[in-house]
Amino acid sequence: MFKPLVAVSTDVRAFDNYVWHAAPRQYLEAAIDGAGITPVLVPSFGDRLDFDAILSGVDGIMLTGSKSNVHPALYGGDASEANGPYDEARDSTTLPLIRKAIERGVPLLAICRGIQELNVALGGTLLTEIQDLPGRIDHRAPVSDDQDERFAIRQPVRIRPGSCLAGVFEAGEVMVNSVHRQAWIGWAGASKSRRSPRTAPSKRFPWSARRPSPSACNGIRNTG
Image 1 (cartoon, rainbow, N blue to C red):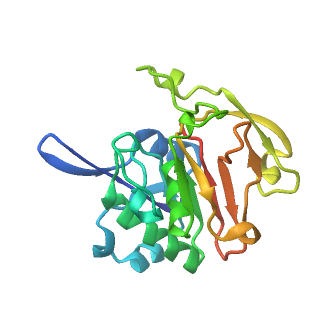
Image 2 (spheres, rainbow, N blue to C red):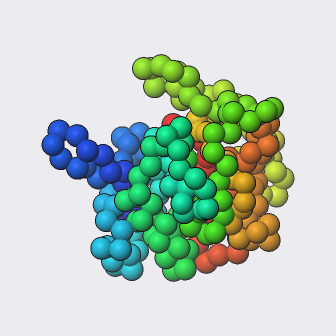
């Protein structure tokens, strides 16, 4: 039985006297068991990689969530200890990979940190530490060693009628988990090419769909 190959982003971590390029287990298990695909990890070596060769060998791209954030220098912001940690090796890999995937029409799913990368890669900007802003919901995970508690389903979102997401779930309201502390302050591609089919009570949109594009390009802010 044919199973599509999907390239998966990697985080760079140093421990046990090695530098590792890795992806969180839950994303890989969801890809294998939920979507029925074969994930292929892409090491974060930036322009040392041949992105055209990678995209020629896979059926899609999945950008995972991560503890790190996109470095603010890439969208005109200021780096800070509170907004970190950062992973510039991943940034140097995922951003050009996103642009190339969209150019070539390779399907792309951007999750959590991935949606930061998607927006910044296409010229957008980010708003950091949104939980500190007046009137905003705190979307951070509760402090716990229990992953089921940290990623519990706890927030309602409304699906816009006629959107691409409504074609999957139908219009209305669904409950999701929500674990993040960044949001878009400037959307890439402007409203004609990109619109959120889903809204949350915080007024920061955790889903995006890019149109028009030869590729299916979607982003999900929530993760778990």
